[in-house]
Length: 148
Picture 1 (tube, rainbow, N blue to C red):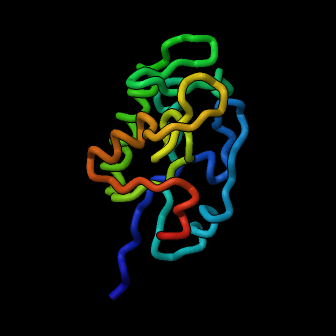
Picture 2: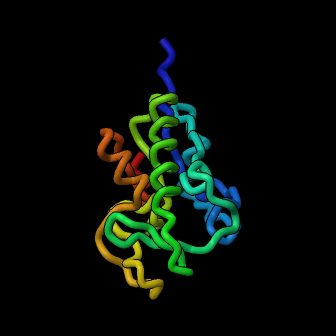
């Protein structure tokens, strides 16, 4: 009997897609190795784009429940919409796990930037990572991809 493949959400930028705030990618070889596995199917997502944000866009950081870009504009609604759409994708594809971009205001898991745009890290999760976790989906950063 053939083993069923597991669908895992993954930040599209980690697969080499140019969807980050500056239009670049952050291809990660630990994530790329997951593509070689026959028991896994990776489902790429970019919560910021799913939330209606353009690429490129101003960098943003989470401050409590809000997300503001470098110009001080409140972009929280885009981040929330992107998180909700990502959860819909997780449910559609029956994903129980996600590998997301570390330190991101939407995807960061365990550490995010503090909102001062000074590259200062604090404990916390991005908007999407937080919502996925609340739905029972295990969230790992790219450094944890080797654990899968």
